[in-house]
Length: 179
Image 1 (cartoon, rainbow, N blue to C red):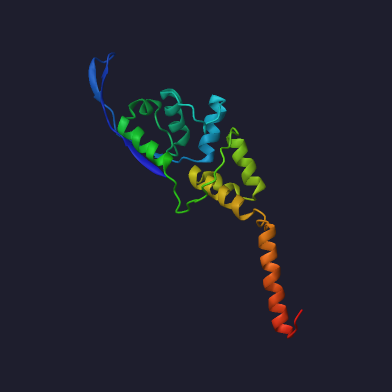
Image 2 (image 1 turned 60 degrees about the vertical axis):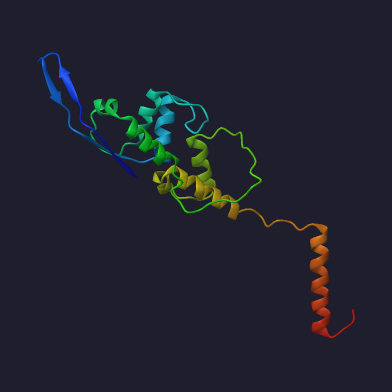
């Protein structure tokens, strides 16, 4: 979870013809599958795409990430560039110590939406409570499950021949025979 403080600012109230000072607003944010699902239901497009998001889409995603209750809508208009950078760094953080060293990564052109991720969770028996995890951590868990569930790599003919040769030699020695 990320906590940011939207700073106070001074506004002019034309009705009262006076300046007013807003209060700082604390936001608790969570970049999770739940947040992505909310955003996609509003915008009807995949969140996890290479396409840039407009400032309106970005601010709306911050709304979807917000765990703080009763945030006045005007608070989102006061988000600073520093806040946006902090949020961007948080979204990009891996949130896990797990790394992958597979150099032969193939490019997957599948469009990934929240429903696809929910499908992966169901297929891999990942509990739904994980939908509230940081999204990068959840995707890492899905990747780990896929790797661990892969069938054992098949041996080529040379490997099979070498294995059989060593098994036969061990049997000859154990049974004290010549073949």
